[in-house]
Length: 322
Image 1 (cartoon, rainbow, N blue to C red):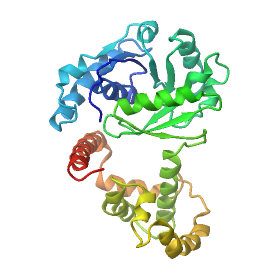
Image 2: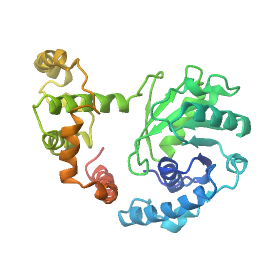
Image 3: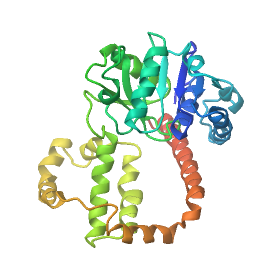
């Protein structure tokens, strides 16, 4: 998480839902002036109250880079109109609903009203940037920056260009994200699911198969990730993991163990309908652990645990090294 920059940048956040609010926190903490706008009357102002509460929690974990919640909050304001939000912004982060027609209309408005030198970024988690920017006059400045929610706690962000996104736009976006304390994953070209959802999807597909075919319970799968793989993955990725798991490094690992995975792979070429019969097994198991009325309370617990983990990783990086 970066320190506030000396030269202040103005950023527009379009859409004040969970993702838009989270981006506003991330950018303001890094020193940006943030103009938050939402087409729903009063939504952006209401978001400021939510943001204030999150900032207090972040301060408790020393995750505001030594700044007070009031200082960070003072950088965020609710814009009365889209034009007001865009007037001085050199980076625009769109976070509207995941509906293609909505994205097309919003980006038409952004392209028409934003400064000519502003990057237009979408937070979409599934729509390809080409699908909603192809007919824009300024399509070369359009790009996807997809966060892993919430971005003020999880630094990784996917940077996905459309076929016509300029190299300058990609470079500027990456510099902006790094300055805001993020770790950009830069795709060479667009692809359904980007990187994160494809990796997460592969794990979920196997998790559902294991339960559906009666090999494991929901608890077994969650324990295997939570108390197993995720402990390493919380500070290094899968390639570094296997590079360190054989005496001679990654090539040695593959020569030793590729046979195991090549044997497993054919067994993984079958989908289980997530919402089909297996859901009658999975949902009751989850509800025994967590009644539906306690979901929101547990979400708050999750975010507090993420804050504690972020604080630990930051401290460990200083003391041990990245």
